[in-house]
Length: 344
Ligand code: HEC
Ligand code: HEC
Ligand code: HEC
Ligand code: HEC
Ligand code: HEC
Ligand code: HEC
Image (cartoon, rainbow, N blue to C red; front, side, top):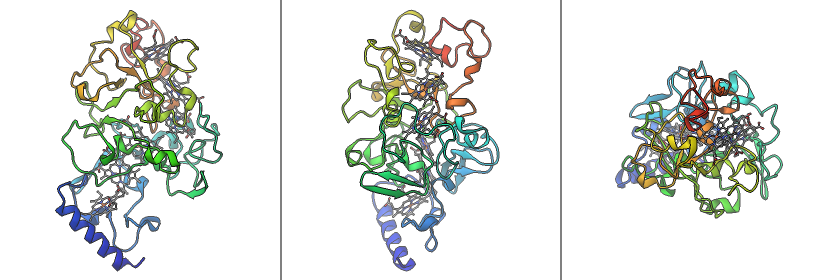
């Protein structure tokens, strides 16, 4: 493709974007992010960088200004982040070891301990279900070369999505919650919805009980319109899925499970929402009540960070400090936020 032709195309689309009513999700000059000549790995989008390049930063900041745009940083290369965003950070999987995060192509090599996603049962050798660090993956009908591993989870990337009033639930037009959708490598994935939720504008760099992301709860069904983040995680970690009812013992901690309004949990219902221990909400339109409500569910991200954390197993807090009935800094946090009778 000739540079001149591509530039003309880009400007053509630019005019449309500027003339259209949908404002671009990014607010500054095209040249800040696009190049007219050389593009990262020959991408047809003519971008100055790939996902990892734009979303990494050498300094400790996790929201970096670029003209009018603010870039959320998920990998601080020069040292730990000063305040991590909701998904955590890939810093520790590189500096501390493979247990501290997802091993993702472009950030780290394959996990040396895990040959597949724990709890995974999809099979499909050499696919994203086995590793997120492969440069070439098997897909139904062939194989595919990848530039980075980010799109194994972010399969609906739409930086130029229309702007919506704060608090509007994510949908297909806006690329779903944080662009999370199974990549359209499978026939079924193309028609499947992505993850539901409401993302807070600073990605939880400064989170408190009334300023945080809202995760959509699971509806308990097995239908393909399921949009909870926990169900999305279970796309690769199938066996860590909900156990409906209590007939079988939990394989793992109950997930997609409503916190009951009884026993030690009664004290959680009505408590201020704690962004250190998020729960998923059944109704995104009634999230205004910034407390844990009856029906709110335990989710994978109640305990884990999606990208990585300073703790083994990508946990949100230091599990080694969660000793029953010993008080200390863990009181009211981590496991004890819900298991209120086990801390002090
Ligand atoms: C802050 C960075 C940034 C800025 C500024 C930016 N873009 Fe983009 N653009 C991207 C990224 C990242 C993609 C890749 C995929 C995606 O998100 O759709 C992209 C994709 C595109 C695409 C292909 C996909 C689509 O949505 O149609 C076009 C065309 C495009 N940009 C044009 C422009 C024009 C014209 C401008 C200036 C008005 C502009 N961009 C400004 C980051 C930016
Ligand atoms: C040219 C720089 C650039 C590139 C390349 C880029 N991004 Fe972004 N990204 C941004 C900026 C700026 C924002 C914040 C503004 C916005 O949300 O559009 C952003 C936002 C995001 C968000 C948060 C969306 C939300 O709901 O707030 C995700 C997720 C994301 N990018 C993933 C990706 C992935 C995956 C890729 C590779 C396919 C990628 N980005 C490539 C600049 C970039
Ligand atoms: C295993 C799946 C997975 C992979 C791989 C992944 N992400 Fe994410 N990402 C998520 C999830 C889930 C969230 C939402 C986290 C939340 O809100 O708790 C997220 C959030 C984000 C955000 C918003 C900031 C935040 O922390 O909430 C950005 C930006 C982003 N991802 C970029 C990337 C980039 C760049 C890569 C590749 C280096 C990547 N992601 C790889 C699952 C993934
Ligand atoms: C696209 C497939 C995929 C998705 C989606 C996915 N994972 Fe994973 N996960 C993997 C693979 C592969 C591994 C094993 C290798 C590694 O750590 O990267 C893994 C490993 C893990 C580990 C162990 C980390 C370690 O290295 O010891 C945890 C914890 C985890 N995932 C949690 C989650 C959570 C929580 C989500 C949803 C936010 C999620 N995963 C979504 C593929 C996935
Ligand atoms: C109540 C907290 C909690 C919830 C909810 C939770 N986990 Fe975990 N998870 C843990 C802890 C703690 C560990 C550390 C190992 C252990 O004690 O089993 C762990 C370990 C893991 C591992 C690593 C297992 C291994 O063999 O290396 C994966 C993968 C994982 N969790 C994925 C998930 C997924 C996916 C979900 C949602 C379906 C989820 N977890 C929900 C607390 C939780
Ligand atoms: C977001 C709330 C929440 C968090 C955080 C949480 N739990 Fe739970 N936990 C629950 C609920 C709800 C149940 C199910 C209780 C019931 O229905 O009786 C449960 C059940 C359990 C059970 C009993 C499982 C069974 O087989 O019956 C154990 C053990 C447990 N949790 C340990 C932990 C540990 C350890 C942590 C921290 C790593 C933790 N929990 C964090 C809400 C939570």
